[in-house]
Amino acid sequence: MSRRAWRSILTADGWRARIVLPLSAGVVLAASALLTGFPHAESATAQNSYSYTGVASCAGSTCHGRSEGNGAVVRQDEIATWQEPSAVSGAHSRAYAVLAGRRGRQIAQSLGWENATSRSECLGCHSTFVPVSQQGPRFHMEDGVGCESCHGAAAGWIATHYEVGGTHPANVANGLTPLELPQTRARICLDCHYGSADEGQFVTHAMMAAGHPRISFELDLFSAFQQHHDADGDYLERKGGTDSVQLWAVGQAEAVARATDLYARPDLATEGVFPEFYFYDCHSCHRAITDGPERRLTFETNPQRPIPFGQPPFNDENIIMLDAVAQALAPTRAEAFRSASRNFHGAMQQGRAPAQQAAMALRSEAARLSDALAARSYGGNDAFEVIETIGGRVTSSRFTDYAGSAQAVMAVDTLLNALVTRGRITVGAAAGIRADINRAYQAVRTPESYNPAEFRSAIGNAVNAIGRLR
Picture 1 (tube, rainbow, N blue to C red):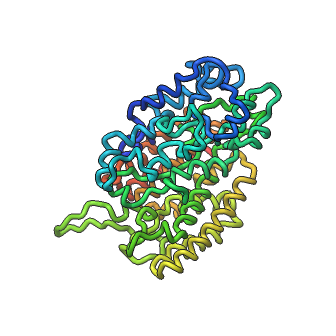
Picture 2 (cartoon, rainbow, N blue to C red):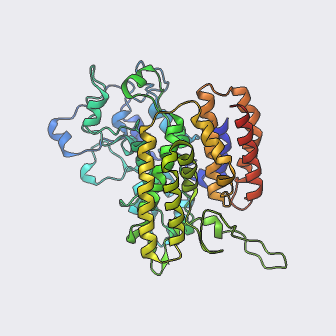
Picture 3 (cartoon, rainbow, N blue to C red):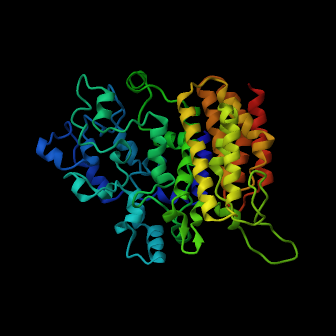
């Protein structure tokens, strides 16, 4: 229901272009390579020679390669979900193929590259990008973002993770990534869905100018799009449960920590005499420029950004949301975080050194919030509290830009779904709020048509309606 509305934004903002291309030959071959039997048990010598086994090693019909999710312990159709050609769930499998598509070719041409499929700048996030020496015989870079990009190099645990008596802690000890931990999941996802200092995992302003889609991140929503498993009793027994509010909140904290960490790095934050504009709010400046008697402002004053009118602002979509989280769920840390964020914005006009120092201070506050949010327990009123804070005057007055507003409607939508899942709001009652949420989505459907006043009205109505159901 709510996910469809956000998918319309993915299409409008250009993100859908990354996930609608046909499967690459490598993906098809990898999924069909092992249609029967357990993963092939390599010799100890062979296993020790590489770390990454490839998608094909997971694709047996008795493993994760079934056409139907009817396995006794896990669904066993995870490969089919990962490969779904027309759904968001198949985006990772199509990530390499998009490099050879029209947009990929255009970006490469603009940047003076022969092709995008051979550039480490692209492969770091459009494939499981590892050295040849770590690739097993069934590993194919063309498979895109394969299983091991998220679940970790499998050579150490693939042969034992299905054994009778095997345990999740033992698998983790052998190299499996514990994605059930919100902070771990957020950091893995952020490597590509925001960026990292590793090779090929940072989108520059030049790439975006050449046509790369805008980057945005929301952990709970993206997790729902990519969920290949059922959170059934067996899953809960082995790994414990995940809470949607916690995933969303920790995701916001980790996103702020990642953004400020990267910004504090001199090799990433500047490009010649210019700052690296990837970190800034694109649409605060990139709006229609026209001459005439009636001006159209391209900048709206934001009360929590102490910067001069017209100065390019740091993209604070996650900072705004984390401020709301802190007020609602970690009030003892709220003032420290808000002070650090204001100091960070203010330091932008003082020079590179003060801005770097302020970024490191803000990162520390975000990391403390992440730890607090990951450690606390979550109850039925948490989502209500955060939604009320997002709709409150202090937070809503900050919805002056497209990116922050898009993040806010995702948040309200995610938190409303959490209330339905917890049984605090009925499906029917949530449906009654859908019109206002859809109106908010419509207000951020495209950057060109974004209207701050209309958005604030729509999101305010939705928040008030949810509050009346408390």
